[in-house]
Every structure is written in C-alpha cells, then in structure tokens.
Image 1 (cartoon, rainbow, N blue to C red):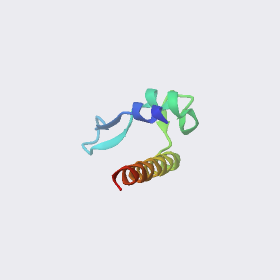
Image 2 (cartoon, rainbow, N blue to C red; image 1 turned 30 degrees about the horizontal axis):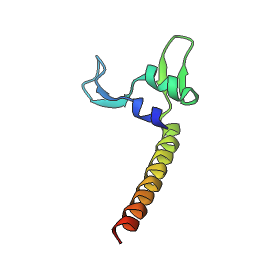
Image 3 (tube, helix red, strand yellow; image 1 turned 120 degrees about the horizontal axis):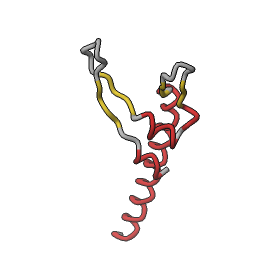
Length: 79
C-alpha cells in the first residue's frame, strides 16, 4: 500500500514515566488500518501492535518482491 508511507512513527514519554516509548499516530493509523485500532468507552485510544506485525510482514514481502523484479530487470539490461 502506498498509504503505508503515511504512517508516522514517533517516540514519546508519559508524564508520570521517564521511559521512552515508540508508536504510531493514532489518527493516521485508524484512517489506514481501522481494524487494528480501538477506542474504549472512556475515550482511550490504542493500536494493536501485535496485529500490526502481519501488516509489516506483508509490506516487507511486497518490497522483497519488488527488489527481485528490479534486480531481474537490471540483470536483463546489463547482460
């Protein structure tokens, strides 16, 4: 998906915790992958990062396929 490029990885710290956390912007993610986003009745929002793994694997597979195609194309033109 070209939309995958619209995701914005961020780092952040909670007010009461000095640890650095990493994630994605909820608003951007819910537009692209609503099935992995949730909102509670109290308004808390979250992203299911475990489900995001399959999305990432698919993106890597697509990229590897594209690289292989480009390599074949490049080899065909240089031989």
